[in-house]
Length: 369
Image (tube, rainbow, N blue to C red; front, side, top):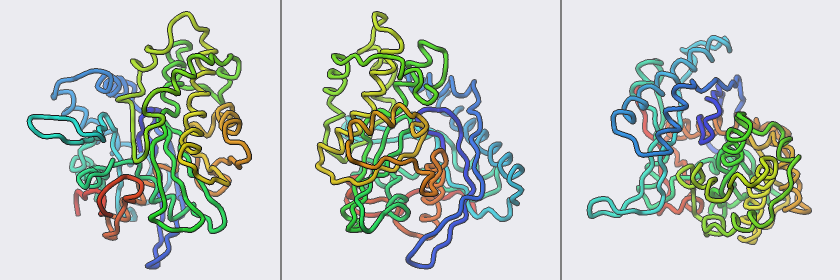
């Protein structure tokens, strides 16, 4: 799994069991590998500005090669034999996600694109590869995102509690799991920014990739006027289903609101408030009864951010996923392994009440035998 933050390549080796109705899993190995700096720069440049098709084609192959190298490293480090791996499931690197129709030629369409050629990865790894998970849902009118809710439904639902499974990566996404246990009542969507704007500020002001534990933001003061303006941005209050990415929340977005007149720590503090408040706003706006919020993703390490979330979501238990056996950093990699398994079993992987698709469908395609 490589997310919008481009802060590493997450690889999990997972042992799943399925008895025909219930899934269980055991995480056997997890590691985050460095995103090669040269490719990271190329991907960020590709996201930030129009690029020629040559760069898209080259990166599509290059990222598959890097993933294959990570697979070899993981197998060596874990001591697990390649022959014991039945499938390799990959999200790919999102460089474009357009869930709302725009005109091309005479047609109005949605589209999404994740870099990583599946056939290249299959040939290099020698393992059947499952990927391209978002497009089937989008072909049926869905947003193609978020896809994590199917994992949350099977592994985080509780009979007596209304639970929100919250992942704070580059973008924040949530799954609402009602205590009724009814799949058709599950909803999920991207709430807005997670770490993406915070990371942009850290690189700009401090030449660091992220705000460790939120310590920098904690030193700053909230710029209330800017927070109010940020909260007025139309995506924040847009009704679900909805999904977003770096196409919206990027350097240009950052520069629209923040000039050099502000103190760097104050900018970090304000952006942290924005992430926390936008999450809370989406829960409150949709009148969701919530007893517990289970947080995963890089943002779960940001203690200041979790404190702010608790401030905006009073009387709600906020816990890190590892307290429930769900890895803070590994969850999305495990989730996409699960989506590959669902494809292998011929089971649907989307939830129409989440994505807005017209029906359930099998997600992804397979490369190799």
